[in-house]
Image 1 (cartoon, rainbow, N blue to C red):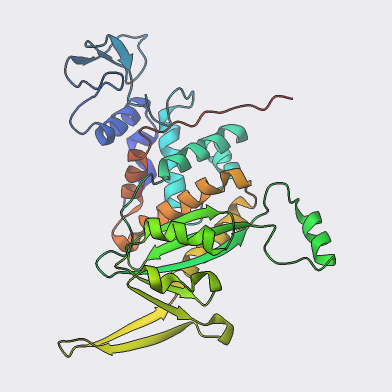
Image 2 (image 1 turned 180 degrees about the horizontal axis):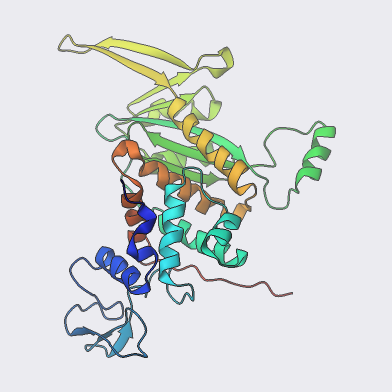
Length: 328
């Protein structure tokens, strides 16, 4: 009988949890986060010593593996943090703060803050331009939620009555997906050329072939990249084959579509509407990072739930997210 992943010792024992995290962040042994040295470090013992505590005899400072990470200064046991990371990385459409609160046995506010820290760990800080060596990059935009200050459902109904529909009151999202590879999403100000093209120039290789719909803000894409192909959704065209013969006489057939990025949006919107239900504009970039991370570390790319959790844990270093209570 196959063993449950949740039976792993590091999900239930605090010392095992520290050992698990240390093995992933310190594969060559402990490193002092204060001075950067890895020699003259010893693990502290004693009944009153905190679990996982080390001391660096270079700078004379004590430290744990959580120092300099999103887990630093947290009063939540590390084993619960590891459970939270696993639940968030293994749930395709996400897991709500209410569900995390019930599962982990913490308050709703704690669960909400934990989930945002994990999303920060999932956020990619830098990556190579997409579509290098002649790859295909699909680009599309979608609209979600309501821009801060534009009101909620009542305001939306009021605009509808005044025939002011459309997406001007919604948050705009641009997603770039390399076929067979990764996705990167951006919260943008709007769907104008000035909003989209700077992001594409920065994140898409000039050697790439870009595939989009017939939106007017993509008209100049062919001038910037090796190729540009479009599908005309207004004419109910969603995919077509492009056939050509290269200089060696070989036949090539390439499918022109944006179905990959639209499939990504399908998962994103099911998660945001069905699981999270509401998201403030200032937090949208972290939710996008969460869905990007799971897509970029999906099973089809050979990444299972355990490996996906480990990759998220490697992203906790060098990031902090502190709770700032509101004052009335």
